[in-house]
Structure formats: C-alpha cells, structure tokens
Image 1 (cartoon, rainbow, N blue to C red):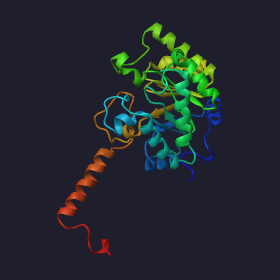
Image 2: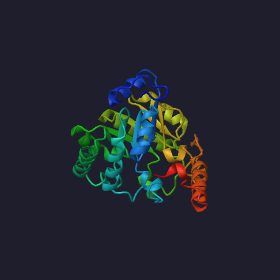
Image 3: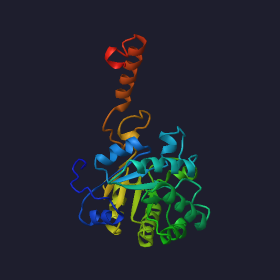
Image 4: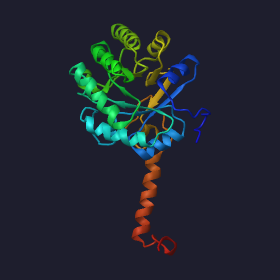
Length: 272
C-alpha cells in the first residue's frame, strides 16, 4: 500500500537516499520499537525507521540511553523489521558495544545484522570511532553517523543543551562530518546544533544529513512517542506534536474501566 505522498513503493536503500539528496527530495525518518507501530509508520510513507536506543527512555523508563543492552536492541529491531516492507531500517548500536575496540564493534554490528534483518546500524561519534566505522563498513554493513548532541555521552557533556555553539566545537563537527562521509557513512544525524551549522554540513558533504533540533536539512527525525504526544513530560523547542495520544488513550482506557465496572461491557452483542 502506498504511503501518504509516496508514489514509489520500492524498498528504500542507501543508494536511493543519496539519490533523494541529489534530487532535493526530503527524507522522513521516525523511530519505532515494536511490530505494530513499525507497520503503521511504514504504511504512512516514512523513508527511514530508526530502532533507536531511545527505547531505553520511552520503552523502559530509564533516564538515559546508557542502560539498554545489545540483546534488548536486537529484540526491538527484530520486531520492527517484521512489520516493514518499504522503509530502510536502521538500528542504533547501544553504549558499550563499539567504543572498546574495532574488533568488538564489528562483532556486535554483525550480530545486529544477522539476528534482526535490519538494513544498517548507527553509531554516535566522529574521528574517535573512525577506525571502528571503517571496519564495520569493510564487513559490508552500512553505517549511519551521529554528531552534535550524542546522548550516549551525556555523562561527559553533563547537559542536553545545544552543542557546537562555540567556533572550535563547530569546526570539529564540520571536520567529523567530512571524515564520516569520506569513510563511507551513507548518512549522518545531526542532533541539537545551530541551524546555520547544519546548513554548512548539508552543503559540504554529499551524503544525506538528517536533523533533529538542527533546523532544515536533507531530512528530519523525531522520536515517535514524542511526536504523537504520548509523552507529556518532554517538550523541547524542536518538537512538533502531531497528535495528543496521551489524552486519547487516557479517555479511551478510562471509558473502558467505567464500562467494565458498570457492567456495560460486554453487552449481548459482544459475547458468544
């Protein structure tokens, strides 16, 4: 079934994403963590589905992304892949699975690809993990980069504030983006950086740049639970809520409770 505003139902590949950048076609990306949600997201025409380590926050209730394990990410990614026909599925490599050394990073990336059936992996960081990225690419695994605010490094940053406002950090980010693109990353997520810097990166590299809190880019990504309004406690400036599912679900569940307690449910038509 074609998605909204999508007339090309072919499977999205890394090659097609690069074509989209060259043709000026914007890329829509959202997170998903389960089969049912991923199936709907795919049918709606999203180009990239990210099985994000944000599952640590929205699915497990952790304060950071650090606690989620490789086995848990594999479980979520496997569930998502089963529901997807068109979108490119990218799985985050969780904290601790690629920072130690390139050999361990490759081994864990291979596990993700073998056990989930996803299309690519995503790693946070720049030149400091370049050797690992190259080794993963050498193994035939597509890699998406992630620069700017990198949530796995939150304890080093100490804050979720906008990154790369200062000239030196901005210059490092531009250098990191060029290095990731030159190494062979098929795309880069830029999180919570000044919009002017995002534009410089978009113009300086030939791979798609996906923004989240970084202003206009080749595409955008949001956490699905945030954009659907399920989470009332998270309201950053960059978030646009497209629904208020918190209220919808609260009202529906409340009505169900009322109907059960009043013996209205099930009625005669709802029983065998």
